Image (tube, rainbow, N blue to C red; front, side, top):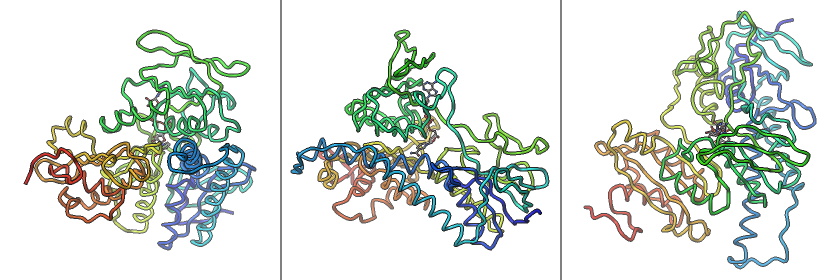
Length: 477
Ligand SMILES: NC(=O)c1ccc[n+]([C@@H]2O[C@H](COP(=O)([O-])OP(=O)(O)OC[C@H]3O[C@@H](n4cnc5c(N)ncnc54)[C@H](O)[C@@H]3O)[C@@H](O)[C@H]2O)c1
């Protein structure tokens, strides 16, 4: 028998489950097909983000940061304890509980909204039929289909995953002991976050990064400050290092790489490969279904996430743009609303990015170098956390907030942050930008004292040349 739905979503990561819930809220009959299996082989909702990415990594980042705070700063803050030790099994158990609570939460939300969850692998056939394989094998008829099958880590030929010594970002969350020496290929978002976790817990960490420029997607001033802080934490970041090959030994891995000075070799206990992710399009559609991909292998879509096939949309990591859960979620909402007849759009100019290291790195809008390259004249205001009372009280006064405003119109074009809680502080900046705020709008807003967010206010005053808590302000009216 073939069940009929208004909408079938393939993939229950943030983009897919959000689309399914929003469509159900709008009165559509919705099914969501997903093949993720949890640690005991049970079907689990939430995709990579909840099960093996954003959420578990944040649990480990939080605990490892608490450990460092207590070990390195506790005594200076007047905290005395006999001995601080790490119970890695308990740390992992905490992380696993956070994950299972949240994935079960999605199941509850599906139930509450009347979304039918079908565990199994979905494949799009011609005429919007969806074939589900696995235990619940069946065919579904769909008026609309949303493809949201996500992405998987890129496997390098020079260092292929073996699941034990050479691992991807998922396996790197499951280490049952702290590696003595950890190698990471790629000093991007994942490399830096996972490197931070294991460095804080005592591992020596070497990151091999092919690019000569550190964090080339970030504002240069932010990247420079972050590199300074990470180097002080003894994250050994080697830029311009191209991996040539690797060899798994009895008790570790040897990596061969090349930089300007020649060929080198590095021996580590474990090697994490974090060189990007690729869209999951393998087996997503049948041979007879002519779904158009772009030149990088992403599903080709327009600004409203429409594919070349009638009534078939694609969202999240499967399509162009940054591979960020929140970008996928907004696309999911947009597509669900458009299917239900609303004229919703995503504002791709205001997508916040965050790297959850310590200090945290975040930005929204354009970098100073991108504005320069485009010939857009802008005014910059920078305010350091060293002059913010709350950051001082927290003992986390490194970093700054930088605002870039159009020199002619005063409109805020970019906000760049490095420092404590910047993952949260980027939200008011994104809010201001999504309302098309001018720098003066931020200047005229009252911020609570003493808070970290005052640094955002002071950065806006610095754009105009009169930050209150800067010793050497520019003279201005
Ligand atoms: N906090 C977050 O928002 C978050 C967290 C995790 C992942 N993600 C997303 O997931 C995706 C994947 O993350 P990622 O860190 O793997 O990718 P990334 O693109 O952020 O970083 C990969 C890095 O690997 C380098 N690289 C590529 N090939 C290499 C090679 N052969 N040798 C050495 N270096 C090499 C690249 O130059 C780049 O700096 C990204 O799009 C990222 O934005 C986001």
